[in-house]
Image (cartoon, helix red, strand yellow):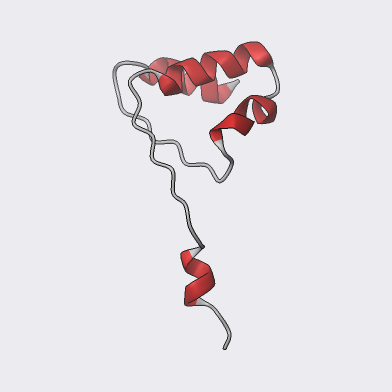
Length: 66
């Protein structure tokens, strides 16, 4: 899988930012292959900073029709 190869190349050498609209607990199911999913999650979780945003969508407020 290309994503795993990218993470392997960057692991412990460069920063990688991953953005997803899916909760982290769903990633294993989305990736599919349990072995690849474990490898990806190991590389992402090792020395990571995780920011989870909550609340209503800003776009919903910006484009609300009154």
